Image (cartoon, rainbow, N blue to C red):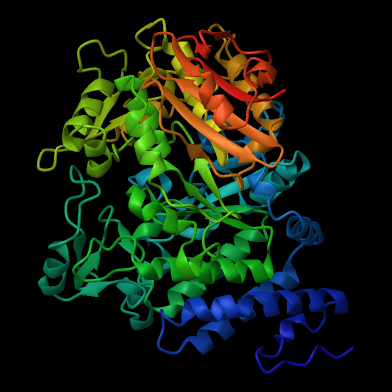
Length: 628
């Protein structure tokens, strides 16, 4: 049978597909017809001659499609029929370093029953591709995208792990650093050896004229141990752009070869069974003089191009934007304007995480409500990643306008939060560590495990309730909630975090303790409480990510109110962020169409306490209310 003839709007199918069964070729053709216009639209603002770039990317997609295993083709079909798979309320994520969770990739596979029993359907393993020797920014200085860290295993072990996870309905998320590679990466080695093709993979300047001009508007990511954004390299004979560390070379996305290289990497890893790609440092990928070189419009065009190629070759794959940016820039990573619903499928809700800790420290939900209300609507086909903690430090992304709207100084509130969570504020129960203090700006970020930040290290009597409340907020907000390894156990800061010389300069390792197998007894009831919340979430269709989270104006300043209007009825989440009893007036329920006489709280599984024409909330308590 001859391959389908090209249409006026579509090129001929690549010869790679000639030996495939007719139905499989037709599947590729149908996807190409669907996604090629989006690919071409993404490339036009990026490159002077986009057509050859589009053809190269289609050929890459065809090669990977032809080599894709049958079980992954079946997954592609399933996901095409269930495009909302990652938005569903039963989706709960877990994030960990593979070695600190289970030693190796094989060890992770052996621990899969634990994850499945916890209710996990999505597993994010922190950087596991081969990095440069230490220092390597915790694995984010990648020297080889095609291999796995030798201490963790091999690419065969990776393929075996993804297969084992799929058996339990768990999707693997893997980090892909978009902004930079290690100085030891083959592209960089060839550039240092004098190859002009690969020199153009990077941003290299012969003198300080251009770097100094860019530096006028560039912030510093790590001012303590990596000041400036450019590094002199004697082998290159020039200043190379290094946003993060001198050994992490920013790549030149204005060169279409870089786009094609990354597309090839993504598709190859997808054929190893990776289902979610965390696009690390995505906000930094496009450079423009006179700006911060973050959040440029071309970033979203690049993401759209990569996503369309993946949709053609392996539609089971979704993208997650690691964009820890200001609230005003955040929604664009899920799609706005011409990129609506065409870029990343998932993005971190950094603002929600920051506001959880702000509410607990201030005992006030008004700033959180104001800030969360300002976020524009997101495409209904996307989802937030919600989380209370992650592997990283906490930067206090409190907007000055939001703070002013509730009578606060943004600068003073950020300083208060840093002092509070460092344990320096009078009466603080938190036991965090200051990370990367910048005296010039007053920026003081914080490291620390969820339990230590919530007061368990200090033995505070409200700490367990705060831990469960933080989980309840992120599990009840919608999106895809992710639990950081050990938070479900209440693990404290690692007291020996700096014993490893490689970790000593970076106190973020304090909140990356090893998983204590066999697991300790559930002394505080944290494990039971988290499992109860996960199970309750899975039973609530209201928490499907396509249903918007509507943050209401607080009636009681100590209670965050979040409504979710579902066709089956409205759900109201109410969260008491104070150590005292609070309430929700029944008028709030009636305004949402909820009859106070026939409601159920899905957190407790019972009827809520009604008194004085209000739902009563114990200290740090929460309710998820729907019609019974």
